[in-house]
Length: 231
Image 1: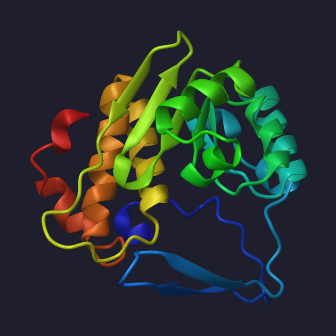
Image 2 (image 1 turned 90 degrees about the vertical axis):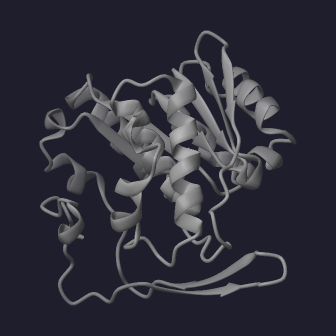
Image 3 (image 1 turned 180 degrees about the vertical axis):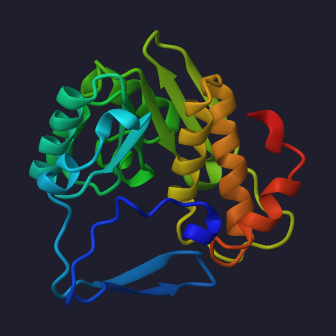
């Protein structure tokens, strides 16, 4: 991770614990993935772990919608300790209890599965409906819709969309494409670019990634992309 410029000084280390493992079964016919995950004894992050960090030195803190009660407490801690930090959350799993995680954040990322579970069947309808139904206080709602691209809604009601950008060659590895989209979009948003430019950049990076095996090749191919300087 450090070789790719990712800082690890805030990583929590649990001595003697085993690393979780995931086996991913990919269908060449449909592109679907089945993930078998095993976590024997590695604990989740705690509020105490977050409290040890110099939160006011960060510009953006992103949460996954996981253990809801703990994440909600972490969000509250960030808001109290570092009110100027931008906070975002991803709602991926189709669980209704995750709705509470949007009340203390600026930006909400929503997966297609989560949106469809809320009875929204297009990314535009999802962005509009989720903004009005559960994310009224958020500055932005961003919905990723796979091969259809992505949609974003700002707090003033403006909706923008981006097409997906398939790789130049064949699709090689879709695992982590959603995480890639979120990371790239947050990067662009943190540089104060327009919502339109940000989701388009996210779709472009995700499209590049699915044409590569894993993430490491992005370090080689991303700087060469003709659109890299759009943000």
